[in-house]
Amino acid sequence: MHWMHKNNLMRVRVVLLLSLGLNIALGARLYFLYRSARPDRSPATTNVVQVALGTNAVRPRVVVRRQFFSWSEIESTDYPTYIANLRSIGCPESTIRDIIIADVNQLYARRRTAEVVTSDQQWWRSEPDLEVLQAAAEKSKALDDERRALLTKLLGPGWDVNANPSVEGSSAGIALNGPVLGQLPAAIKQAVQEISARSQQRQQAYIAAQQQAGQPVDQTELTRLRQQTRDELARVLSPVQLEEFLLRYSSTANQLRKELDGFDATPEEFRNIFRASDPIDQQMQLYYSGNDATSAKERQELEKQRQAAIKQALGTERYQVFQLLQDPVYRQTQTTVEQLGAPLETLMPIYQINQATAAERQRIKNDPTLTDDEREKELLQVQQDQQKSIRQLLAAKGQSASQPQASNVTPPMPPTPGEAQRP
Image (cartoon, rainbow, N blue to C red; front, side, top):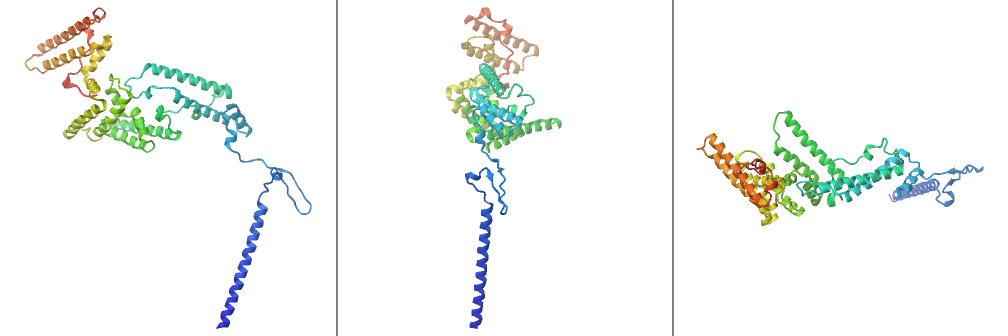
């Protein structure tokens, strides 16, 4: 047994020695192959490779062209140098044109964002500032003329013939400018534009389907589609960026601008009102837009909450002005004063006259003791009394000689308080 054990040990040693020898030989072979295949990086052989075959040395000179380069070696802030570098690497002229047009367009797009103040940047205004619109149009034209002149200088007078529309054209869709949205990275701007385009397509498709089916448009469904858009935007925008977007482009902000027509809100006031009212408006539109008694009751309660939130956002004095704007009689009085060119101090006295007239008209309409002829005569008398009172008021302000005829002093009466609805 001892002899057999000894023989086994010897066999194991022989196997181990053979295995070790084979591994050493294999490693040496791999190292030799690696050394043979590895290029010589010495300066003397960078551009020339010498090949020896047998004892008769044959050394043909093989020129090796550089295959890789860094784009930073080509790109330059100086456009003529940039173009020369592109040509030096054999870039086709059509490709050079597209590269330069795209680069110049991006440069002037950034300048438009920084230098042109557009009406949508004044998101708190109910009506665009005409001076801002004119200044923006003039500045945009000046920048575009400058852009085209630069491209003509760089690429020649025919650079815009058969230009690639994706390179030459400006991006469609909503304007993403201002101190917050204007600073979004290009990829985020593209994502926002795509979300906005999909949102518009969804709403248009729904409205078209309802019309084709002969069904009314459900405002709750439209609100749900808009909420879907908000959810998509929230995945690519920060809360601050999302609020800035909603202030400019949301349906609730558009409605709020109409509601604040004539209020002359400051940017901060509009932002505060939006923050206070938007969640409540969304809740009413999503869950309580129906005609049932429960929905009507919930809307009434939410409207009280909305008014309280707006009052807290504006303060007592400014809220009183806001409340007046919700009265159609007051809005109509504003229009009348503006049309007449009357002093602003006549606004409240004329409003009080119109209020009294509206109340009297409502009383006459609801009086069951009057015949139709009697009702018509009394309504006519009320209108004449209204016009007479306004003429006397304007005469006291020294405007009687230049005022229109009595029938044109006040436009048709707005709905009476009982018939008024919030816009």
